[in-house]
Each structure stands twice: as C-alpha cells, then as structure tokens.
Length: 158
Image 1 (tube, rainbow, N blue to C red):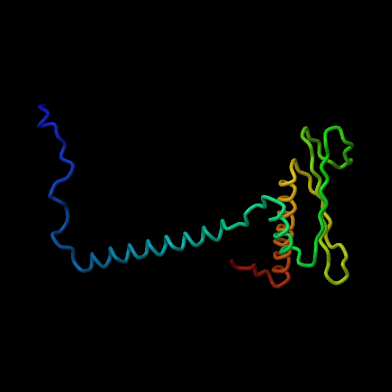
Image 2 (image 1 turned 90 degrees about the horizontal axis):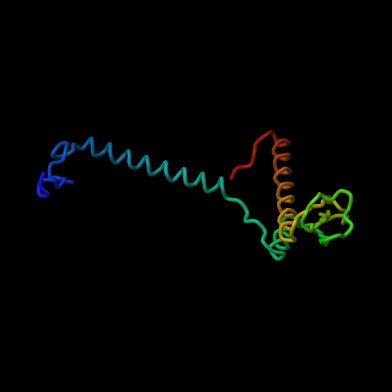
C-alpha cells in the first residue's frame, strides 16, 4: 500500500439520513433537547442545595462571628493549651502531641443561666474553635429535627 493510498478518509460528504427532516422529527429533537436541559438544571439545583455547607472556621474572628449568630443570647469560651509534661485532667484524651482544651458555654437570655456547657479537645487552637462551632451547628440541627417531630413530622425544606 503506497502512502497516497493509505490515507484514511475521516469525513465524507455523504451523510446518512433523509435529505430533509420532517417537521415531526425536528419537533421531537427539540423536545428531547429541552427535556435534557430542564433535567440538567434540576440536577444542578439539587446538588447545589445538597452540598451547600457552611465553610469551616479558620480563625478566631470567624469563630466569634459564627458563634455570635449561633448563640444570640450569649456564649463564653475558655482555651487552655497544655505544654509538654504538664499535668493533664483525668478525662483528657491520650495524645503524643500537645493538647488544646476548649470549654464553652451557651447562656439563656432571660436569666443569664448556662443552657449548654461543653468541652472539646484538639491538637490546635484552630481545630478546637472549629469543633466548638460544629458542635453548636449540630445542636441547632438536632433542635430543628426535634421541633419538626413535635410539629407533626414535617421536616424543613431547603
């Protein structure tokens, strides 16, 4: 086979099908394209709502802002950093790295009483702040589920 004969024809002017598509076929193709477009938009909206989550807290200023929103009646946090060889509380997790303890409280507006008091352990201050915020967000989600169950089982809609 010579090089001139070995050239593969990639396209030709001869296409299959009718010379002119009927109106029904054209309408059918347009309807299929429209249905696929609608389905794609619905999938996009569903996935966007499903995966829309709050960004994790990265620093103390974000923690202050987010906790201010999550605890409108007030909150307090105390961070303790344990250095190497320092005495640890009995309930501290075992760790080879230094530990950070974050104790936080949520207050009630009416009497200023502590409604929630929790402790989180982490390997860094940023991680401890992130755990505090996630803990409060979990509390709110559970409160919403509880409220929906009391209201007849209808869950909230996004």
